[in-house]
Figure 1 (tube, rainbow, N blue to C red):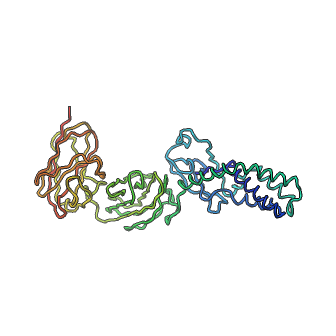
Figure 2 (figure 1 turned 135 degrees about the vertical axis):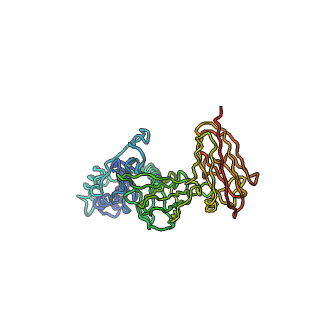
Length: 426
């Protein structure tokens, strides 16, 4: 972000002033009035952002002649170097290495005052006595001397300008069809229907906000492509009884597909807000929004796995039958599952434990275990040996694990029973 100050404007103004006057000297014309006018026009670089306060961000307009309010940071955020960051102090965020924090960015009405007064007075002095010709040779020599001095600073100024343009290219978020929806107040309202949003510009360190009314008993599924835990992650919110924003769910990463997915069963008819965050680069993104009047069944996706409580010492049983035929082919293990339906289960290990998992079924299944539901690279074990019974016997460290029962073939379905026994390791 370019932090514009009087020192930033001084080199550009002087170089331009000297060059312009030299050209007009050759043609025996005065330059003061035109320079003064130019100084008032070129006040900032288009789309540069600046912290007006610890919450407000202003942006330079397309013409470069004024500042306008861009966005207001959230309650837990602070404006730092032209972007909203989570924290209470910009100085803390940059570890105290902040040379200038100008929190008094001017409004468009008084931005002209940012031009260095010394340069402005110099321009007025030159223009007042030279409306027709520059007859005073002493003034001519002064202008020529100034031009020679400024020429020595040109290379350094160009290097700084190039560096500033590179910073701006990273931090400026190009507009898309959803406008300036980078805050909750400016959330883009979506129709209550399934839809695909294409070519959405998701930007580095920005949040894109959307709002949609969802009926009770409806399943909402949102996918971003590309998407992951850090980039294009999805977070769903609803206002609570005190009109405070309450987070309901965050997306899971599906590395095998290169997407992020959020699945939610709405139990209250209300307006739901979701935002998309990105930590690296700017990217065009496709957002898929699906609304289904039939609630999703637990176990069908990693976002809603079927929870198994294994805290008791007695064997824990879970029987699945009618539900399995409704499952999708969402993932696969290293030994089974490329074609068949699968069902996900979740359980937690609190201490180093010996675990014995047995799955009995009336159709051919395989069983595999992961430490991250949607990431196949975290697979702990996979078995598909027998037709009726599959077993996993292993020692597990404290963590949350995900167990999958996966049909061997696409058209297979039926009943199965899971039993889990645990013994804490000595």
